[in-house]
Image 1 (spheres, rainbow, N blue to C red):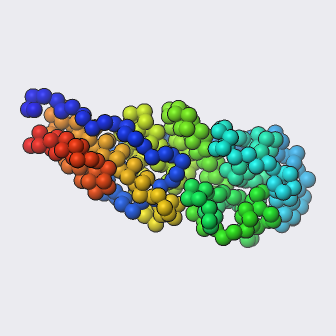
Image 2 (image 1 turned 180 degrees about the vertical axis):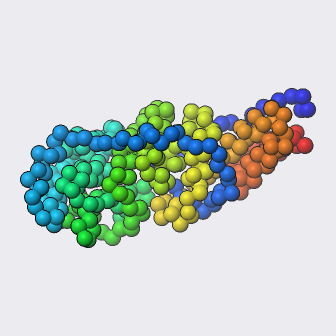
Image 3 (image 1 turned 30 degrees about the vertical axis):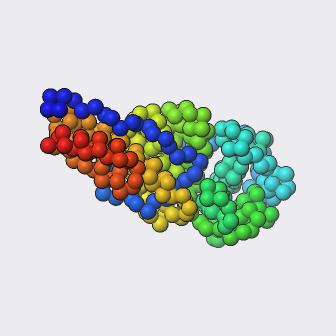
Length: 325
């Protein structure tokens, strides 16, 4: 092999876990170094959600007290009052709706929350949003609601039967708290999902990148970007986001995905292995055997530790290492 180029024998893009479920991690690769940076972040410097319908629905609240504004805002948009209609974007296989479309056609919690957030801003009220897991719900069933901060936080969930409640009043765990500006990332994340499920990975990446630059702490977005970049064969970018995902705190990962987090860790770890092998091959072929060997050794260690390479692949990587000596 002295005068021959090593061929990359490990298949890139093996079967992936479905994107529909999130991931936590019990095996983080904190030691994995990241180089470079993601797509420039000015893509979200001007992220505005305009509405031609919202002002007319809530303009009569302008002269009310903060408490009255919050109470009436709930009454106006409550599903039980016919203010908003429930229309699940995933079940309907549609892209996310903007504020006006949500008002006229209905939406789900990720769309309702933007209507409420825009209303709070229009009325000059402070607030934010909570991402929560409802007790007894499926692992990937995450709920998001806005709240007004008028000296105390008051939840405004159009799907609840009364103000300051979430859904049907069941117990819940807060997974993350967002500002009203950060909240906009949800729209782009949902759009990324829409394109990903249609296997249009380049468009999915654009939307996920927009979501990422608005809010970098969503595990799902980092994971989705890693998968999407892997799908189009860009392992350098896939590596970057897979590492971001694996470097989230173990406790946070488990909070988000208490049952299946290890599957996601394995999927992200597989991407790390593939990226290191690809870079190792590049280094070997350019004559840098020392660096190539280190990359192959790291790939083997991560692959074995996380059980994401089979025996045949182990032997191939060991061969790579031997050829570098």
